[in-house]
Image (tube, rainbow, N blue to C red; front, side):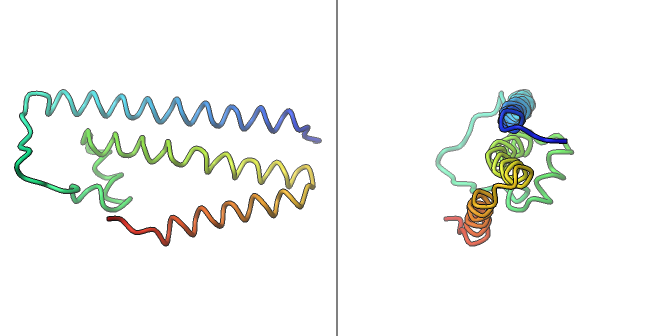
Length: 125
């Protein structure tokens, strides 16, 4: 099957729209859970609590989200929102491979390498 440039652009557009809709739906769902459970509490701004332990690792974030913790569900939606443009680069790379445009395959693989190197080498705080 031969792919045209418009087919790949259409697929990339659907990936971006779908990722945005799914991630924002997850954030909204988590926000509703958070407000229902914690909407009545008054925050104590005199004491800094920091990041909850379940938000420090991907595995514990997923476990907390499946336990319907509002903060974890919101964070999971944000992670998905950040992952959407990365998925776009992956889809572009696949499209360039199908089109046999190897210069752009190399460029998009370099972009992915830079993204993943910065993710692995990044420091928090």
